[in-house]
Length: 232
Image (cartoon, rainbow, N blue to C red; front, side, top):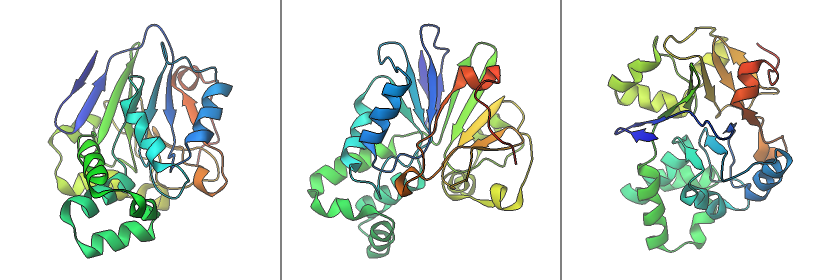
């Protein structure tokens, strides 16, 4: 069962398969296919949960956007999705310049109607996702989360939502805050040399667009302690 409110999505447990959390993809669809094959991903049973930033910088942004049509794929909104939304919907030259400078140049080969379609699709993406795994509760949010409780996001404002897409202060300051109401929260956005843990927040972007590995974390293995990484 899937429940989505205006800005947040809830996924029930997946009793028949595995759930994986995917780091920032940035247009590397073929690299994802290789990683899924290595994990023997079964689209009939398994699910893939993206921390956002599907697009830009890599060779196949449209192929990555097409993942949104797959019933086994779920994503939260990243700052690169937001840059597409801002540029296409506002038609503001500053927003376009910012997006193009950050890898959005692939859009210059797309028709206006095609970009408008994807802007509307991305506008519907949640800012956060919560998935149940047995008695555990796992959160996904693109950049970081600094509110005391995971459920505080339900009444958060524009400042907090921008922080979830753009913020880097937790990693920059080494903030070890533990967020109540959730077992783990997975993030991307900021490239880390190895998967990094601060409190119960886990940062998994290894910079796949720049030659780093594309991280896929099995939630089951993470909870079992068999897929853990060096903590900060």
